[in-house]
Length: 144
Image (cartoon, rainbow, N blue to C red; front, side, top):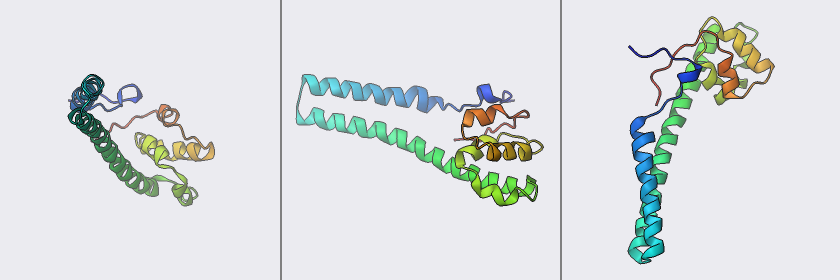
């Protein structure tokens, strides 16, 4: 069984990406810079360009996955809010930013209406601040 999720441990790390691929790609860029500085040639320049491109590719692949995840969360939260918010808050659903919705997704159905009102009324936008307001944390283990 998975460990209980809360604010302190909810950050998602992908070991193969964060602790293997990125360090290797970064080391490769460093080595390629060293080679260009010490043995300047067309081959070493090309190798450096490929090393930088691989590092950029890895970061962009991660960013693209996170962007799609945020879009799915936005859709999910719009559906939840339409079901859970009182009638007077329904017209304000479009006021939420993606960052606010991503933070609110961890709130239980019972606390979501009051928390949503607070976020809108106080114009809270800092993700950490919003997440720290959540009392009944609902884990999300299906993240990218």
